[in-house]
Length: 263
Ligand code: IPE
Ligand code: IPE
Ligand code: MG
Image (cartoon, rainbow, N blue to C red; front, top):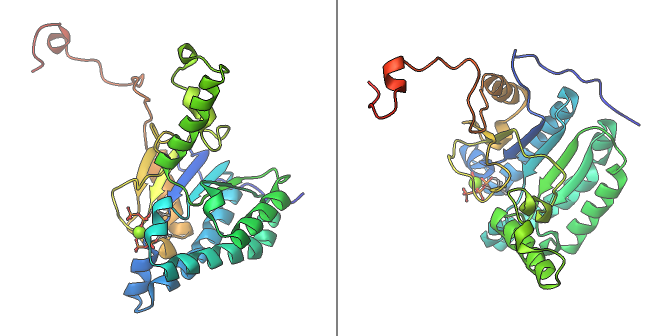
C-alpha cells in the first residue's frame, strides 16, 4: 500500500494533527486575472491537489476542506452546475494521486443534495481509498454547521422518543455522536484564505478551541509556501483550553489579594 515518506517541517513547536481549511477567494482571484469567476474554481483544484499532497507528506492526520456550503446553492445555477461538474471530475481524476499518497477520502455534509453523478463519483472514490492508511481527507460538501446540528438533533430527538436515550444522559460530548463524522478529533488549526474574518457556518461545534489563521492569499494562490507560513505561525501558539499555562508569570502580591482592584 502506498504511503509517502513523512517529512514534517520543524518550527520548534506543536504541529496540527487535524487541519481544516475554508478555501475562499476563487472568484476574486479570477476577477483579478481578468477571467470569469468560475475559472477561479478550476484553478483552485491545483491548490487542493498541492495542499492535500503536502499535508499527507508532512504527516497531517486529517485535512478537512470546505468545498461547498449548503448556502452556496443560492449562487447562480450556472456557477453551481460548473462546481458540481468540477467536483465529479476531481473525484475521478484525483484517484491516482490519492492512492499514491495513501490518502483516504470521506465526505461530510448533506450529500443527498449533490447531483447523482457527483455522488456516484464520491462513493466510488471513498470505496477505492477506504483501505489507505495515510491521511484522512474530508471534503465538506453541501455542508453547513447549522444543518449538521439540525440533522444530528433530529436523530437524537427520535432516539429520545423511542426511549433509547434519556435526557439525563446528555453531557458536553453527547452531541458529538450525532455529528456527521464523530470519530475524527476536532481541528487543531483552522485556516481561511482570502482575508475574510468569518466562519461562514463551518464546523461550529468542532472549532470551539481550534486556533485560527487567516491568509491574505486567495485559494488559488495558497500553495506550499503559504501552508508553511500557517504552520510556522501555529507552532508559536500557546493552547490553553481555558486553563493556565505553567510558565505564566505569578500575579503581583497586591493584585492577587481578593477584594482589592488590580493596579
Ligand atoms: C470559494 O471561492 C469557493 C466556494 C465557495 C465554492 P468563492 O467562490 O467564494 O470566491 P469569492 O469569495 O467570491 O472570491
Ligand atoms: C465559504 O465561503 C464556503 C466555502 C469556502 C465552501 P463563502 O464564499 O461561501 O462564504 P461567505 O459567503 O463569503 O461568507
Ligand atoms: Mg467566497
